[in-house]
Image (tube, rainbow, N blue to C red; front, top):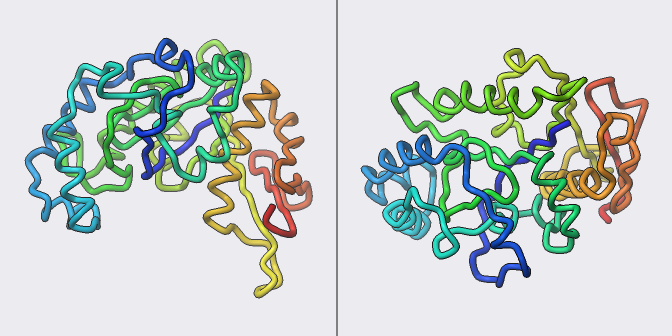
Amino acid sequence: MLFVLSPAKTLDYERPLPRGASRRATGPQFVPQAAVLIELLKSFTPPQLSRLMDLSDELAALNAARYARWQPLHDAGNSRPAVLAFNGDVYAGLDARSLTGADLGWAQDHLVILSGLYGALRPFDRLQPYRLEMGTALANARGSDLYAYWGDTVADYLTQRLAAARQPTIVNLASQEYFEVVRRPALGARIVDCRFEDWDAASGRYKVIGVFAKRARGLMARHAVRHRVRSVQALQGFDAEGYAFDRAASAADRLVFRRRRAG
């Protein structure tokens, strides 16, 4: 069973790494492919990047500088483990810094982080600062966008990761933008989608609230890591921060978790 996450726009390269994190760091799987994208991105001026990615002038200049500094060699001086570099709501929920060494070892084998620049990452694969969302319409030799660039590569990678499983299963904890790169029919695996809903008093119904749903995806990944979840049934026990499995709203491959109020 593999758990698939989105990356985060916000990065943390300031806080000291936990003890032993650098020793755990691994090399990204698809550095040559990432390097091709970096060369494309280096050809854009900051104003062009601003238009391509809908960025402010400040963010466009920041990322142009990041592309200029990016190197194929990933080491302790220019990178840090992805799970400790990403710093958005998902990763606040996962809270990798508080996991044990054994937990992190399990996470390395069972979590996959999709990335517009790196394709697919294990939690401790080294990451240099960047911004490149999967939905970016960056024309390349394989097509008009990053879905065309990464689709076959990600499908092959996930298939290889699942090759030894008796019942290959992917648990989708990624956003729609990122999971679109996963070519479902090509995998030959069961795909289980998780949906997190909060009660909305104004509308009188449960709905997905972005900031809460992102955190919940990280919380579910943490639940999987800490409990060594290996079955869809075990996922149903997730109850962090007030969420509970709603059997009536769910289907075999679509698990819905709801709560009445934000925890």
